Amino acid sequence: MTPTRPNTMRSVRRCFELMELFDETRQALSASDISRKIDAPLSSIMDLLKCLQDLGYIAYDSRDRTYFMTTRLAVLGHWMAESKISEKSYLAIIEELHEKTRETVCVFWQDNLAMKCVASKRGSHPLSFNMSVGDTVPTLGTAVGTALLAQWEDSDIFKLIKKASHHGESSIDEKKILRAINKTRKDGYCCTYDEYMSEVGAIALAVPVMINQWLVFSVGGSSKRIKKEESNIVQLLRSIALEATIK
View 1 (tube, rainbow, N blue to C red):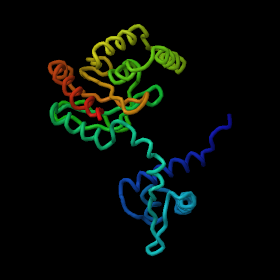
View 2 (cartoon, rainbow, N blue to C red):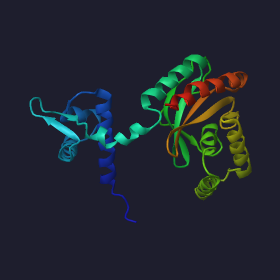
View 3 (cartoon, one colour):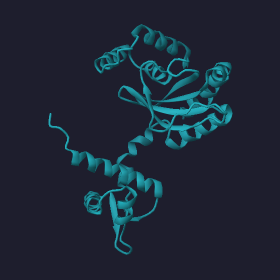
View 4 (cartoon, helix red, strand yellow):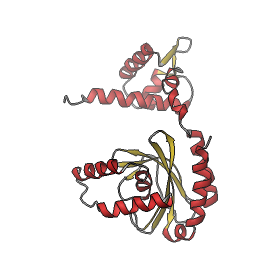
């Protein structure tokens, strides 16, 4: 297998940084503005813009020498509109869960052997669990990972456990993991206390978004508070997050 060239990796990274910049600013930008905001050489940015312009993803306005994304990218991902839950709605779900629990609410998506936080809102209690967008936790042995794996076939779970073992995760307790998955399948949600992090409790529920794909919503905070409110939090997760997928 030919190793990926550093210059190629840099170009790919800048391409996505460019798209994220347009998503953040939502306005046309000059090449020099883009160069400054994503901290890249102007010559490299000009090459990237020219390439994306040729492909139809970027448009150039000669009147003020600015660039902007075309709708081609949105069309490219139009099939994702078939998802049962949109970004807008899951952000609204986070807000509602946070308002009613005052705890930290997060949404996770599986990323190989980890669960990556894709959205979060920190709890308003003086002592609150903190999880930022982009942070990851293991898929194996956490509430959010277990909630996801409970939706999988057993054969796929064993493959993931084997893969994790090959990657040096020596602390895997297969029997404990399988017990937690089976309990989650029975209960419909997963809760953990003082396991992944000391004095932190979390309740997680997997929500189907498309065929064989799930988002996992979690409510986390002080173990004492979460345990006391477990039944109420579970009811909220089911009524707010799970019912949001019903069309």
